[in-house]
Length: 390
View 1 (cartoon, rainbow, N blue to C red):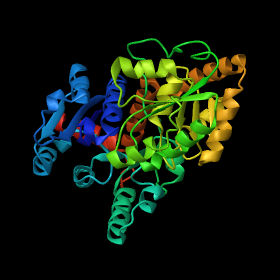
View 2 (view 1 turned 180 degrees about the vertical axis):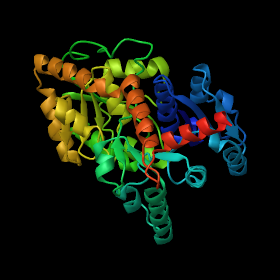
View 3 (view 1 turned 135 degrees about the vertical axis):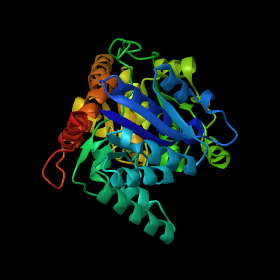
View 4 (view 1 turned 180 degrees about the horizontal axis):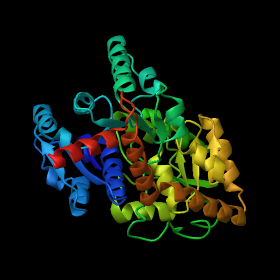
């Protein structure tokens, strides 16, 4: 079974998809799947310097990078028949549309991981009527032509159009292929006397950081650590909400050891988003035994509620304040229980479970019936046997 994964760019400046993409490819390759990647180069930047490109190459995965859409189209025309499944990430980029169309024309199975782009929420946020109509047409294209849609959470699936083969496979968060299962970064609160809440991610209005800051200012026994950055004007508005008490720390964008230090120093990770199809920062916290406070409109909220690994709230500063004040009077033994539950929830986010689910799905795709009633894999095996017998 040969799979081609397609992503518009591995440039880390595009946000989270490149890291999710590389993790998913590595996880699936480890599940005995022959997999290659196709992407576009970023003008003026060396793709070899991108972290996710280095990760993929280090694992022995072929990454085909073309200078533009024309080059990607030529690659697909020449090589699409080498693959059994064409799997694209993201829906709006032309390379994904082209790959699905050529997969259909060449009789290959196709799958899409939409990264929120198929959701009704995505279209609700689109103000231009013209753009909204274009997006509606593109959604119809994927629903009709793509053989499978892979959502990262039940929330994303519920908020997307129906599809004949829609599945939920959570994003891979921790690499259990080469290391032990997730372990807590500590046992108990980070510091005595005050509860420390943390936010990790980009500063964007849909993340509702103003609600987090407002709740932290009003919850007097709390501290807040904000790790991230964003639009300069928006960040200035957020900083103006800081009461100057010293209980709010702005540590900027963090990676590597500074990122791990962030998790070691917070008691709860908070996501107050108006909508987030998965919630990677919360999932990363759970993997480290850190409970999460998330709104109902964050994808991992279902897992948090089911496992008791944090608090699920409605959107708004008042709901956050109630959650913060509840955490500030939390008994130490109850917090340790939340930590244990966080690690239990994290078991769903391992590379091995993701890779197994993804490889199993590809096999199911190849068993889908053709118009004559045979499966794609059986018809190809028969064709190969006929060629060998001649």
